[in-house]
Amino acid sequence: MTISFIDLKAQQEQIKPQIEAAIARVLAHGKYILGPEVSELEAQLAEFCGARFALTCASGTDALLLAAIASGIGRGDVVFVPAFSFVATAEIVALLGATPVFVDVDADTYLIDLENLEIAINETRNKGLVPRAVIPVDLFGQPPDYSRLGELAEANGLLVIADAAQSFGAQYAGKRVGTLAPITATSFYPAKPLGCYGDGGAIFTDDAETLEVMQSLRVHGQGASQYDNVRVGINGRFDTIQAAVLLQKLTIFEEEIAARRHVAEHYTEALRDAFQTPVVATESTSVWAQYTVRVEDRDRVATELKQKGIPTAIYYPKPLHRQAAYERYPTTSGGLPVSERLAGEVLSLPIHPYLSESEQDRVISAIRQTGKVNSSAASTCTS
Ligand SMILES: *Cc1c(COP(=O)(O)O)cnc(C)c1O
Image (cartoon, rainbow, N blue to C red; front, side, top):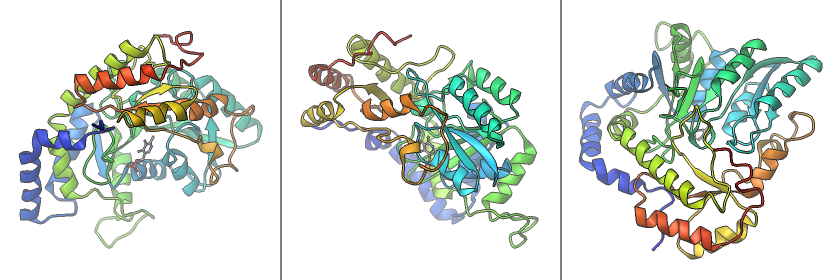
């Protein structure tokens, strides 16, 4: 029996009648574009995280793009992004004609390395370029140290756009993701912790003016009416049917976060002596979008697990500064050794709220049987 890497079917079973009824209501009222479910969801998302405003949009990538356009990022600007992330983080910067500068990540948390960021800021300035913004990524579900990051950004006049595509529901210092940066972007891609049945995303802010600009940008830069265009925007709306689905999924989201945490804690307890298990910083919580260990000889381990019916995934096999489309952009001098090493060692194990205790034990015993222990295990584990 093969274990599911992510089990969306099991989740659907929990609330199938409610989802079907919610979709049926949309089919009945027929307001497929920006229908009442969309604004209802926006209100609930804002309330869930404590942000003043939430604006839904067509994807996590569009959420980042709308946030970046609304922040005025464009030609001539430098935007710092971690090299160990999904491509969208850097992509929207390059699309706007700005320059992504790749920064290394921390070897324990896999989150943007703030010392490396500071070096990159200084190097950028020394080259006569304009440091404009930083996009920290809450990789695998946990936010970075936003208090230190905020100080560093403020001291250097940098805007902060949070790429929280993997972390909606997580916290830093008791505050929810969505309230940790002036603008936060998240994704509702099906495999994310809060996923819909297609593409989707949202942006969070406390600033009414930023909200208004993003609302306009989301519908082709519209002004007072639909065929009045006051800025260059995109078609970035979220579908009403998807909002209807998410409203139902939101009702079980807290329980799902707790269930994910339970699986992660079980894994860590059972694997930490033999593998380099994920480190969650003291001030942060994670929603465990992924549970990622580091293994040398990764191909062999993945193959052996697969033979035992245990799927794994690699997020991400190549750091962004090594991607053909991004090779020409700058990195911190001295290269990005942690990102490169992680790309060769990371292996994500099955994790979802409905992974049974016995399935978890199967994963644990199978990976333990693969035997190889990472040389840096335990010694660099700080919590
Ligand atoms: C998923 C993801 C995105 C993009 O979200 P989409 O909804 O797929 O467009 C951006 N950044 C990170 C870190 C992601 O994991």
